Amino acid sequence: MRIGELATRTGVSPRAIRHYEKAGLLSAGRLFNGYRDFGDQAVAEVKHVARMIRLGFSLEEIATFPACMFTDGAAALCPVALQAHRDKLEEIETLIAELEERRDRLLATLKAAAQQSAQAARVASRDQEANGP
Amino acid sequence: MRIGELATRTGVSPRAIRHYEKAGLLSAGRLFNGYRDFGDQAVAEVKHVARMIRLGFSLEEIATFPACMFTDGAAALCPVALQAHRDKLEEIETLIAELEERRDRLLATLKAAAQQSAQAARVASRDQEANGP
DNA sequence: CTTGACCTTGACACTGACGTCAAGGTTTAG
DNA sequence: CTAAACCTTGACGTCAGTGTCAAGGTCAAG
Image (cartoon, rainbow over all chains, first blue to last red; front, side, top):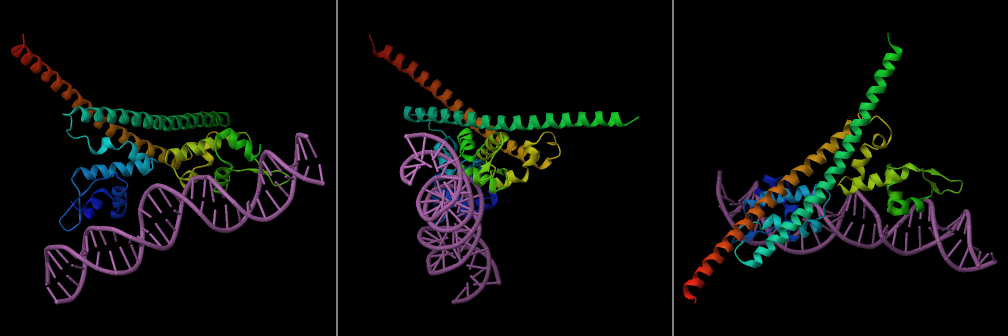
């Protein structure tokens, strides 16, 4: 597909998509007339990048562990590719660990908030009783 | 404490701290000589802001729910903050899930490759025998 | 053939989160 | 008294991520 369709299907502007491509996060073929030609996986890729950015990763950061996002196809035959796959796997797990840390921090914040509001509710109802019947 | 101490205790630069204050995320008193004067809670506040930023929140986003993040109780009175946190959390979990899927696919690929190479080894050794002693 | 929608590259503009430098006041150490 | 270390405000610089505009090629519809 061309860049416009990819843009509408991902909700990411063509400008941003070109930017991602130039940053090496996306690879596009070219049509005879010079137009970029994206495969279907590009939709997932772009969404993925957008999500990473919303999470506070820079394009450069994303570029350090991106191989996994783009080339997880079927090049498992030669040992070089095999090692590459193992490296990618390691990178993915590092990334997952990092994300889980972020997630846990968020969860902790939410939990603390819940506790506080419960506490507030208890105090409120106790005050209610004191002033009530 | 003054800005320098706060900076060393939080690992955040004085410049950034002034930036946070100007953005309304921090409140500081003033000493007789005009120097900023921060209380002990400021350490936690600054660290909190830094953490939020690392999580991908902008100062403006953070500024929409500042008081309730730090003051006792009233977290429930700040649904904006909670919802923002839940949204981030959701994004992170989507990303983690996506990555885990890719990781699993990679693992499967590696496993298949290992089987294939084992198979190849068996074939090789059988050929060896056939041609051998 | 023209119009309009879509594509290209390139360049400049803006925003956010700072870094950095300037020009100066304050405080402590020697 | 002076130097060093800290503080102030203000202004300009930077980098990333995008918007936007310019100048032009491509292409399907009328």
